[in-house]
Length: 473
Image (cartoon, rainbow, N blue to C red; front, side):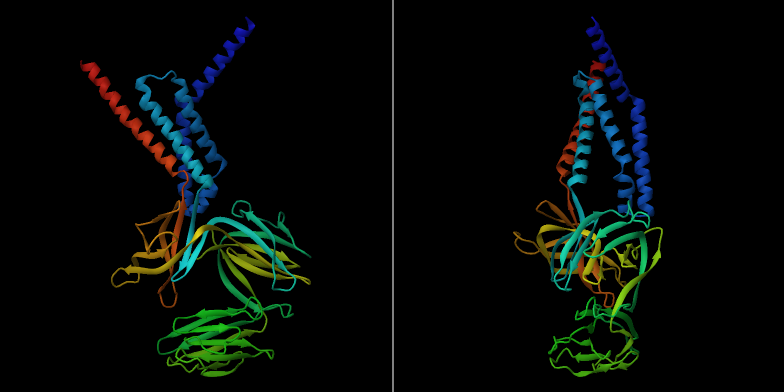
């Protein structure tokens, strides 16, 4: 008798729980909660961007909790109607379809991929850049052979380092500390003479190119990351290099500035139709020379450091713009450095050299995409793009494949969309195509859920029509 009483109480308690979970009151609360979360996410996305909305709203404990309660409410409602009758078919199908949609969305979020792929014209690439970020640290004793010390996933957007709670990285003979983070900054490059001149830093040259006839006035820095590196600035009709000069020209208008032990710069000028140099000489800071090309230009050495190092002046912003990026501050051997997102920083100690990288993760697609041709149509009389498309090559498919704004390429489980393009700032000619790469493993499940919901709607009208016929007969 006590056992039966206990079982009865358990059944009554279970029934009450199911009634509460299936109640209209809870359903209204869940619907209002979903609407609130979506509204907040929309506001955050409009004020910041989709990545911020994803981190601050859509992938939070609150969003997961609301979706979990919604799933429980849907299941409880179906259980409360058990045993089901024929006229419950539409109701059951609709609820099952929603649950399947939630499952598909969860699989996509957990195992899907959504990133960007930049491919230069005539080049190949197979690495997709995704929003997740990593810190990588490499070390070397001789400055040539580097060993990976650390590869760590970080989310400074949600969990930034601070002076009181830094991220510490143990190096071979010192400690690298990350002590500050800024979500949105507009950086301006700052080049200065190296504090310690021990032959570890490359040279830095700030040059000016002027042409009064066509009003060209280019002022830029060339900075070597280490001695002997070759760095280049291409301004359309010609290119300027800082580093070793070749013996022969490469069929282009080029100037090579090579640092000398005396502290001067030795320059070598090549013409596009000649392999031999057309002019050589030495240049000091503040001096100017004419390369001797057909175009009447002058090149001036505005500032020159035989050993230079770079840093950034940062203007913080409250919201992102096309010019903003993220930045993290490092402390090493008593010095502070700012490092931008997708940038690297070289650090020196008495016995080793370190390269620290902070950037978006790159994921290997497993196959290359080669961009053969990129074409763009502009609105008449303007430089604004109206439509653009890419012709690409991928393995196993014969001939070029076209990817346009309304025509994605589906290949090996990936959908590759034409997202944007990059132009040369001087010539305004396209130099690369930017694709959006998406893999949605939950897509088939979401299609199934949508189909079941649609079938439930059809069944609803069927039983409604059937019921109306029964009333009139």
